[in-house]
Structure formats: structure tokens, C-alpha cells
Image 1 (cartoon, rainbow, N blue to C red):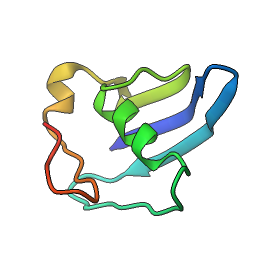
Image 2 (spheres, one colour; image 1 turned 120 degrees about the vertical axis):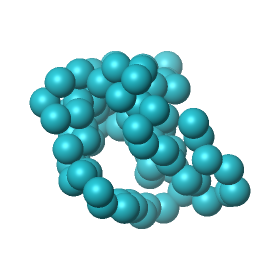
Image 3 (cartoon, helix red, strand yellow; image 1 turned 45 degrees about the horizontal axis):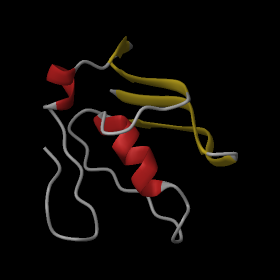
Amino acid sequence: MLELRGITKSYGGRRVLDDVGFDVAPGRLTGFVGGNGAGKTTTMRIALGVLAADGGRVALDGAELTSEDRRRFGYMPEERGLYP
């Protein structure tokens, strides 16, 4: 299971993610929604390793994600294209 726990991220003095957490069960297609600026893209970039979180943990089956683990899942944004 992909697990995000207590994810935080700030840009300058502005906190854009504050204690974000959710699970994605194996074999599941999972989506989450929110208004523009809600932090969806930032959260997914952290899960994919494109951005580093300021705090919190991203894990797969209880262990910290490796670059090899991150190759096992992808992210489809609103625009066409699949992050590797």
C-alpha cells in the first residue's frame, strides 16, 4: 500500500501542504479532487519524488520509497501526459 503521512511543504514563508495523508491500496486506481491551489499537484510531485517534502513520510508497504518503487506507479494530471 502506498502511504502518505503528515506531508508538509512550504514555499518561502507560506505553508501549502499541512499534514496531508492518505493511503492507496494495491491494484486500485485512486483519485482525489480539490479546487485550484489546494495542493493536489504538489502532493503528487512529492509522492513521485519530483519534489521533496519539508516533513512527513511517503512509504510503500511500510518502507520508505526508493526510485525503483516509484517506477511501479504513475500520475495522470488533468493535462495529457504521464509522469514516469
